Amino acid sequence: MKFLVSVVFWLFTAHSFATDSAKVQWNQFLNSYSKQVERKLKEKSIPGAALSIVHGELGDYAKGYGITKVRKGRAVDAHTRFRLASVSKTFAGSLSAKLASENKLLLDDYVSDYLPAFADSEYKHLKLYHLLSHSSGLVPNAYDNLIESRMLYQDIVERLISVEKICRPGQCYGYQNVMFSIIADVILKATGMPYEQWLKEFVFTPLNMNDGGVGLANMTRDTNYALPHVLGRKRWHTAKLKANYYKVAPAAGVNASAADMVQWLKLQLGYYPSVMSLEALTIQSRPYTRTKRELRRRIWREHVTQAYYGLGWRIYEYEGTTLYYHSGWVQGYRTDVVVIPAINMGFSLLLNAESGVINALTTDFINSALQFAQNAPEA
Image (tube, rainbow, N blue to C red; front, side):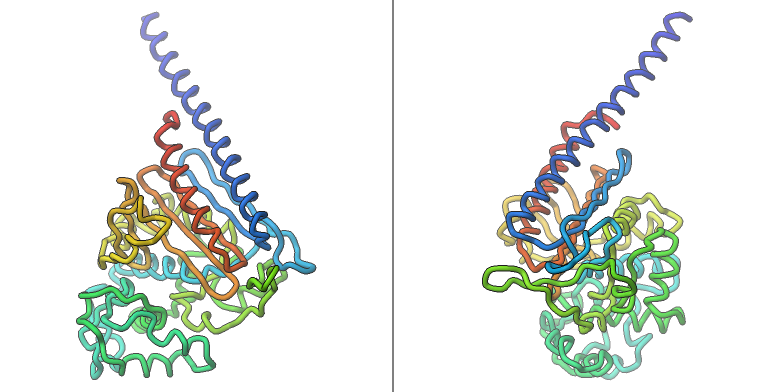
């Protein structure tokens, strides 16, 4: 009996020691990476940034760097809003997967089942998952130039569906913003509720993502938002915050803070099943479209062996580990998000400047995170 008590005590203390040791290493990891971010942002004179890192067992991290604008800006904090640009597509993909898992729409349905204008177009055989996986058969980035004009969204769509397709739906990959955003019209028709309301009531509110939301009015509702910056000859200049890409909300219309992104990452790691079930997470991460071009990305080509697009998410096989990723770029902002379920970690970095430094910082995070998971004691 005395021996049994000793064994139980040893197991308990060993587990506690491992947990404490893991937390120490986790804090060291966060401190080291945060300093690296700060150093590289300073080297490039980036005005502001928001960093979010999550480990499902060891904790969350949200931090702001720099200022919201180069002249008379306020300090960026964990609640400062940034434009997510194309990282917004992950929200559309996740919401659509959620609705599909709840039988509110069927991803295998034809778009024309919901939007009759498609029935008499080149895209009468287009299915919902084709919209979200960039496999509509449309030439890449079709009519993105019109998003930046004053043309209304519905007028752009009317032109879009008259464009001759380059392949049958599902056969080739062609990245889209306008075509992707048609999912909002489908969701309204299928459920009777606007896309923006779905995100607010069934994603942002239950996750306590209290800073962000959809659209320009949300972005500017108070002074705690990061303005866009573009590089001049010698320094960064504050640019005008434009409304154009907000007209394609599923593709580029979401705003969020570092604190918001912590919650978004935890959702993607499965920690809020009442908001998004395992079935929904599985649906969104199916490799619908092969994206061979991604294998040639200069900074990742030595690491990535397979690349696909799911529903609003890129899917990579990176050094033998599956990860989910998306980047965003709209005037004055760069954004990245990474989810690595196998090691229970997620990452987001938001910049209010158009700088390629984000590529190196994201890659450094992935490599460091995989190394941490390999060396860290059990949590």
